[in-house]
Amino acid sequence: MSGIRRWWWVALFAAICAAAYAAQIHRELADFEVYRTAGRRALAAEALYREADGHYQFKYLPAFALAMTPIAALPPTVARPVWFALSATLLALFVRFSLAALPERRRPASTVVLLTVVFMAKFYAHELTLGQTNLLLGVMLVGSLRLLGRGSTAAAAALAAAAVFVKPYALVLLPWLAWAGGATAAGTAGLVLAAGLAVPALVYGWSGNLELLHGWYATVGGSTAGNLLGNDNVSLAAMWAKWIGPGPTASGLAAATAGALLLFALLALLRGRSLRHGAFFDVALLLTIVPLLSPQGWDYVLLLATPAVMLIVDRWHELGRGWRLLAAAGLAGVGLTIYDLLGRELYGAFMAASGVTVAVLTGVLPVLARLRWMRLS
Image (tube, rainbow, N blue to C red; front, side):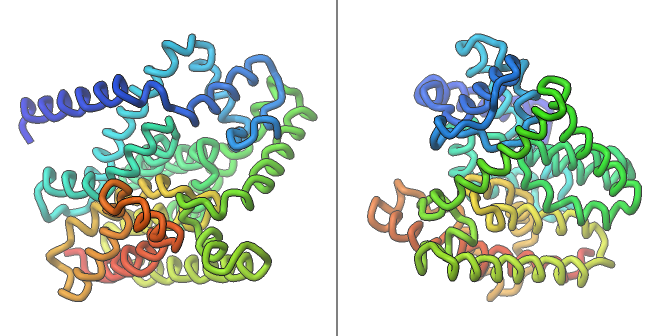
């Protein structure tokens, strides 16, 4: 893409984002307000985890509250547009980094990006409207992948471990990173995790930090059950709770399904270990299963599947007819099931039946595994 054309696309993206913010998003950003509140509390060394906050409880590790203190110190009229601008920039970077990491691209960049955005648009829009941090997480993890590919193992491990404090979901990638990067990756990640867990003690003291960590654990565990039946929850735990009702049986089936999913991922990774550029496949697969494994896996977290969608779009012509049909059904079920297209009743029924989760399990993941096992060149 020429330099002039690229800047036209940048200008168009900026104009769309500015219009969306002015029209609606400036009144939203509910999750950003959770982060900003936590940052203000950290500045005053106040308790971060409070039941009185209700649905908008802070559910992240204490270090993230400290990271939010600079923006929390800004007036709301400044902090909100700044956060939105940062989020929009992260969206552009996430797509750009994912495209750059895509090995031996077959199709034009514009085609890959356009089709990926079509399938992921509803998740991007929801993320930006809430002011969430999954885009930051995605940039950090794909950035870690790129660093690893350049031989910067320690930097890759440090970035991936730091991502845990943005979203604990990043823990899913650390065993793979230790496997791919060896002792250097494992040691570096361990040091960064230890430092991130300890640094709030500089503000709260050691005993205060331990209380915060206990409060975080209690908050995450205590708020999970109430979210399982939400239409937007695409986790395995939510799927079983919606199908048979919450309870020990649903929890057991969710745990068994999660175990089977992890085994599936392990087998896919091991079988294609000798393939060139296998790291991209590995990370794409692991990022896709993150929302399914987390009990609080809201649908917009599926934006992390951006590398996986790019891979499927790019390798489309290498799939057989049956695999293409499966991929098309999976991508449509994940990304094109939009309220405005389906209507209230059909959309509600689809989400209540965990249709998005089923589409990932039966469409997207099998196709990823198929591509993982195929020759790359």
